[in-house]
Picture 1 (cartoon, one colour):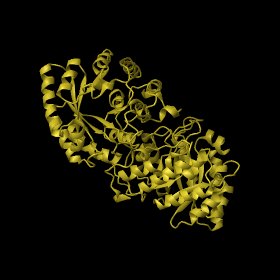
Picture 2 (tube, rainbow over the protein chains, first blue to last red):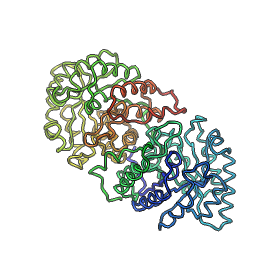
Picture 3 (cartoon, rainbow over the protein chains, first blue to last red):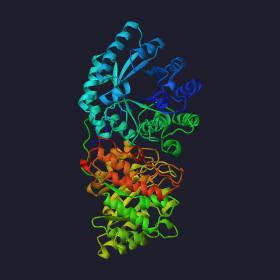
Picture 4 (cartoon, rainbow over the protein chains, first blue to last red):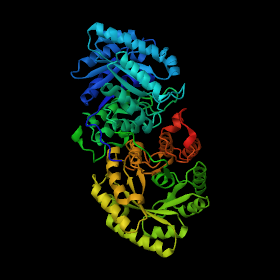
Length: 312
Length: 312
């Protein structure tokens, strides 16, 4: 097989402030969250998921999402996204002027019922309502449908690719501007990523916007590479790999932003990120999260002497 | 790009007993090493690098290589290999009846001088002598030329691919039965692996036998996947990822055998390894190495519910 051609550029969307912080005990102050966002922006990150519009009693860690979002909006050129579990959350996001809101759908029926208390098709209905609300608001907030447990589920076990793709199509039909796939529990491998993403791209084309991989079993970066080979150009990642898996204490969480930024730059894929600055921020944030499991490898080893800053 | 086709089977060569143990403080007893080999064999591993024929004063951890090798040879169907730094080591390996001996060559001149006290071309001369000694002995021990620092070097920085390939060709011309490439310091990325391995396969064809990746910067499994896509079917790995990098305390070492076995099985590549048995062995060995840095992720998270044992 010939050497794969990779996209010239890729975006790393920082999800540490949402997917990361929601999974750990420590509650970061609004001030520290804003500092994190400011430093990530200074290091070249241009897309950050800043929080989630869920009831504060469910996720007190993210109760200040509106304030954090307001700060993020003050940084010129930063695209700030938020997670919204339902129409009510979406109304908050519209009101707050998020650049993008992500409606998660779990392709695993068992996970969907346990986590969102809705069937996947009820979530598709929510998408319709959210799209109508967005259009009625005259607001430019984009809507992403994020299909999770796309490679299997700790509750249900197997999740059929055909069902994942059916729900992705349904989200697009219901008015999602774009769709993404998430390996919520770290069950994916590069071969299954290659197969599923190829079909997803055939369905969604340019409206396929992002891959979200957890490193629970060490394969996040290999999975990113498999998606990258298909031309996927946006990946979620979390600084210091925070996030974890509630079912496996201490297990790795999201792909670590800094390791992913290194892989992409080493592969000659432009990210706009200054990795040294990102490593300094990682040091800072890891300090705030003392006692929490942090992950990633680059911070220990440092950058290779051979890494050319040309693409940074 | 179409979904990559991967080889149907792949071999994981265990190098924890050599590359792993030589890099850490703890000295395992001969009895524990033999127990490790016996259990790895029971878990389905069929190729194990059991030690190195270097002077005991240099690597006291591996001083019992001859005894460990004798034990390994008692297991029917196990291919036991050893590292040999020079002709003298090769004579020991021939005498002891190793199935395979690996002569390391460092493509980085600076690393070669610092580590082997020879230039790369002097190592090629050693290969000629070792081949002559093997042929004269009437012994069937195979000879592998392992080209290290193939993706760069902490001392020298860049190592030119053309130089790596020239030395690989020289080793083949000097009589190596097969050749391999090693990312000794964790500088490789999947794109550079794809490029270099494609050229290496063009040169060595069926005599290209193995990829050796360190996980120093988290990319070992992504790098394996890139090589796998080219049809490479043998990879070195170390249980619990032991090995490390002397320049970065605590940094990740070799690809972790158990994580690699998982990735391969998940990708549908047959390895013959029983991963549950391997995880039990990992637990045992990690217990022997208390205080040493161990790595890998699967041991915390466990196998996915969706992993089919069909290929095991």
